[in-house]
Length: 354
Image (tube, rainbow, N blue to C red; front, side, top):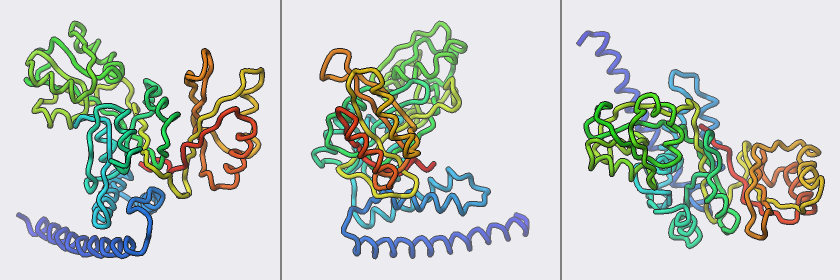
């Protein structure tokens, strides 16, 4: 080892010792705050503010997303000193839903895998889990219909969102592309990789299963089969990665919602989600959108879904920028209550940070 290398490593060791002392001091402050406040340990708006502050202060070389992930884990560990929490997600282990839950809540939380989106909602509604993480839309495949249907009827509130870049991998027992005769995966994952699969495995049979984790489990039992899913599934089921990042769209992203029995206080960069319906008369939709323009509130999403109330009747899912306590958003909500035949406020929450 050269003297220069030894010197640099000694500097890193010194910095690590300082980091440990600073992290311990931060944890003790978090404990003191936990004793003073009367609310839950997890405050989504406060954690979003911390992450925005960290990113604003970042001058590199670490990318913003990596720094945000580090500080999310720090907050998770500090949060665990205050209180334990259970987070339900659409399982089993080895799914993108698990990745989203871990990204948002960190390793300090306890996670409960659920067999369906319905069960995630049920666990939150009954208090079995404090929080739930459910997929709501994918940038290439669109909305998750079951989540939208359950949002219409649930008493649960939205208190956060997670944006997860979807990195699909091909995995098998042998790790050799030439051995693959069948490909298992969830329907959406197969759709997101259909061009790659058509080029690389044009004659392989494609079979849709209930989850990417189930696909990995099946592939582990058949050496002529492969699975498409996250890299974490390969590690869980003892598979070798054949190829990474096989999704057709490089910016493929899934948006997840965090649900709870409460929403969030203002963070400064928020969204509010609504469900609306209107009379089936000319100009009715235009009338619903007019308050947004009049109050300069930006709509970031509008999705229609068949209503169960009657044939060919629809409800509209709308996301707007801002918090329901913001004056301009509050005015919009007041006007919509007058114009819509039905309105449900699903909650206000911090926009995903990174």
